[in-house]
Length: 58
Image: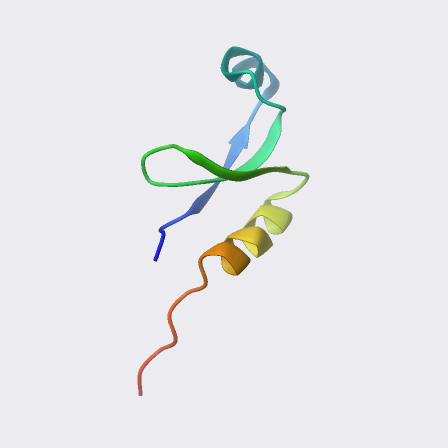
């Protein structure tokens, strides 16, 4: 399972990185996995699709 988190890349940083400003799903290492997304909610939905949380054991 990948541990992904949402991250917002602002305009200044996007110019430096050569990417579009927006929300990205990133790995712990900082590697972009998905994006850009318009909102944090959109990004979180994609993270749930890519790396769903494991089901809780009873």
